[in-house]
Length: 428
Ligand code: SDX
Image 1 (spheres, rainbow, N blue to C red):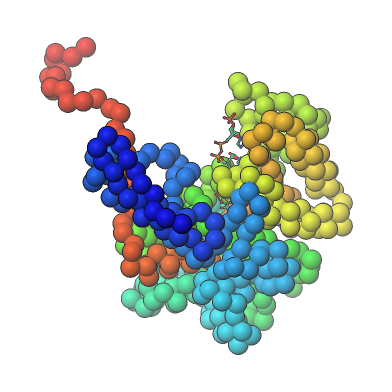
Image 2: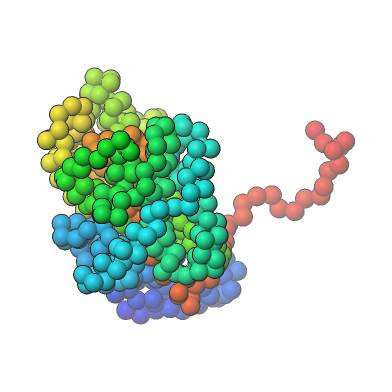
């Protein structure tokens, strides 16, 4: 591995190699603009590394995903979400004692400031829960400071406040939308059980837990815990790079995740499947619409910037979808069958094969979330709950990296060159 050389006209410039421990190396172009007066252009940063990171490794061609070196398949099968959150945040799998202390510290923050509960009642019931979640995390930063002062920004305290309070904020956003009372967390319950009970429980009696559902949600959150420099994580880093605090940086990440090309895709997949069902269930005519160049229809839940193979998370979700949905009758079965037919039709179609379009993490998750009882507009909130440790870990990694600079990309200006002002009475 050696440095690259850039040569153009009379300029020859060494681009220092930045070696990766695995995957793509980097070439440092920091001196290119100064040496040439020109910049690089990479729309959507599809080929540009924004940072060095030790948290997650993805090999898109091989369909590999590892958190801190551990394969996602092993983590999904053998750990819990809080164990994975600890791994993503601190770099090592916790001992039982470390996990117990971590979980106990987070549980303290399941109960939020009483005045925050009232804040939800000011939100229109029909609000989409993602802007409500983003707004409530922004508010969390003010309530945390009012309660803990500057300690609210202590990295571990802020980490535990976010991991403890965000599930409560998510559940209360949902409760407000259905006009039901808010429940306090129950310290005898696990992290996942508390979220399910605060979302669906009522003060009139015990919540009937379903262990399969609880475990399936645990696994789904594990699968979403991190994914290197995706759009929302890059947003968290971008906002944090200005010195903005971790709470408002995470709130910005929630906003980025809400887009249908990113985390909003899990909701869009259900809408797509229901649309195909309501039009008679002909997956091949839908596929033909997607392939029609004049039509902007996309096969939601398919394709990925990095994975040019099957998203390893989708394979795990598909297995859980099959076991959860097959044991429950009703429309989910019908929609699962449609999803399976759609996948088969796409994977055998040259349009998708040539573009290396495979199911991504969002293709099957919505079917499970719906079977759990969540409405479609809550699916991306569940994605955010999973991604929370990854967002926090990247914010911390950037915050503690001495090489960090405020993110300020350049541009290629293609507008008007200088021209004289024209007074308004001489225009037109
Ligand atoms: C997530 O980055 C991450 O890691 C994200 C994520 C995470 O964990 O954080 O993995 C989560 O966001 C998963 C992706 C969820 N989004 C969707 O399912 C929406 C549908 N997918 C597409 O919009 C698209 O595949 C993207 C946005 C995911 C990726 O787009 P790219 O990498 O910019 O690829 P592209 O748009 O340049 O597409 C290349 C070609 C184009 O065709 P041509 O112009 O070459 O003829 O593939 C086509 C696209 O039209 N294409 C699709 C398609 N995705 C790409 N055609 C139909 N259906 C699709 N879904």
